[in-house]
Image (cartoon, one colour):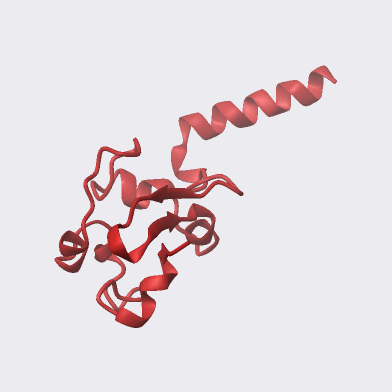
Length: 109
């Protein structure tokens, strides 16, 4: 049992020293923000992680802060190529200006 705990602690230490190998958001964790009239915005980091993206791709590149609530994202900013709009530009990923894709992030209850 002690060897198992030691291995787990070593894994945690490794992941904390090398954040680039960690996942964007742990499995089952979905972040959400009020999305105005279009409905709540949901971000499932697992989807991005499964595509090979790591936390540092967006967070250490200056696109997003690491603490939720600090960034004041707006659709206007995203349409200008900021925040999600850096990748969601219609070339790298679906575009934030594509009206048919709104429900991919915004969910009305």
